[in-house]
Length: 108
Image (cartoon, rainbow, N blue to C red; front, side):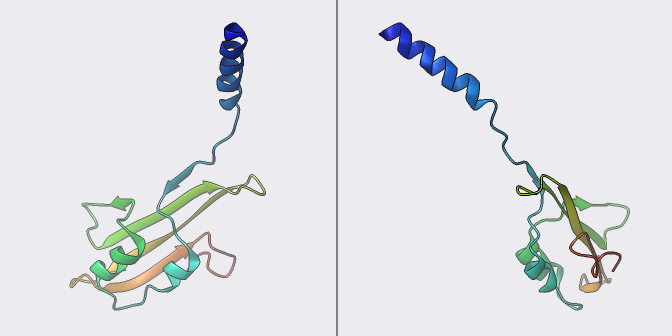
């Protein structure tokens, strides 16, 4: 009886490794959060909504990159989307470039 329980426990452990866990990397960027960022917002306001940027380039301190990379659970397609925030000298949003949200937002 004990041997059977041990064998079943090993079988469950072995099969649990076969389950695919979705991997979400980077920031979590909902379109509503990204749309809430406006020209003139402070860096503090942006980071309060979006979190810390995934990349802060010391050569370009007025640029912050937020990227979300995940696999869509329904289609299995790899999704990458993000936003680049350009700040002015006072660290207020000067420009916003979105990519990967939908065809209308790509390249803006």
